[in-house]
Each structure stands twice: as structure tokens, then as C-alpha cells.
Amino acid sequence: MSMNHNEEYPPEYLADILKSVKTIAMVGASPDATKFSYGVLRVMHEQGYNMIPVNPKEAGNEIRGLTVVGALADIKEPVDMVQVFRSSEALPGVAQEAIDIGAKVLWAQIGVFSEEAAKACEDAGLKVVMNRCPKIELFRPFWKPKLNQGI
Image 1 (cartoon, helix red, strand yellow):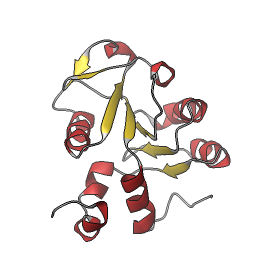
Image 2 (tube, one colour):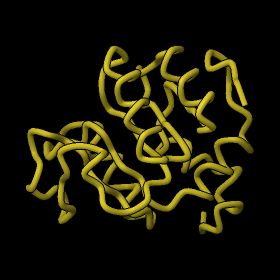
Image 3 (spheres, one colour):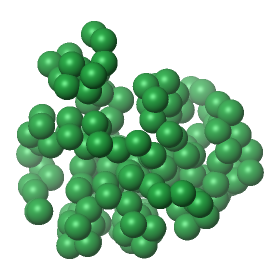
Image 4 (spheres, helix red, strand yellow):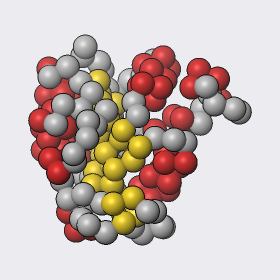
């Protein structure tokens, strides 16, 4: 399914993704608690998602008690969603790695956008979200009940 990633996503589309995914690999996760990616990792983990930090410079170390892997290909379990905190230029490469490991969703963080990456993933059957933050989307009040969470 091909979408216009410059427009607002239908709320059901995002809610369905956030409801259905369990294991999320975060590419570009940082051990620096002042970084945006760290806060998103923390909140997503606290909300019950199985978070796998991916950062070649930090491989083998821990972020918030989670062991960091060097690459998506190093993950030994099925990954539902690949969340990307990298530059837009890096996104097509990460998209290909996400396709290669059989991920169902590619989610690019705010400020990260690539039509090429979106098309590659959609052609491979993945759902794609660009230029959005799952932490922000998760806390939009109108769909918290849909995610079976308390307000």
C-alpha cells in the first residue's frame, strides 16, 4: 500500500501499527540521556514494547539495561518495527536492512524522510511512517483507549 508521506497519516493507520507491533529495533539509539532518542527509547520501553537498541559504536554495551546490537542483521529474534534515528541520507540503507530482516514496519523519526526508502519498503510489503515520533503518537489522548491503556 503506497501512501503520500507528506500528508497527515490517518489516525487508525498509526494506532494499528502501535497496537500490533511488539518488538522494536531502534537504529541510532543513544546512551546519552539528553538525546531525544534516549527519551523515546525509555518511554516506549516503559509502555511495554520489547526495545532493541541498534548502534555499531555501542554494540555490546547497555542502554537502560538493554543490550545494544551493532546492526539489524545481528538481532536474533523477529523484529516487528524498525525505528530510525539517523539522517535522511542513511534511511534507504536502513530500509533495505529492515526489509532483509523481515520487519513489518519502517518508522522514521521526526526530520527523517526518504521517498526512495518509503517506496522500497512499500514494494516489499512493509508499512511506512516518515517524519513522526511514536512516543508523541502513543500519547495522543483520543486513541489511548484503543491501545488498551489508561489515560
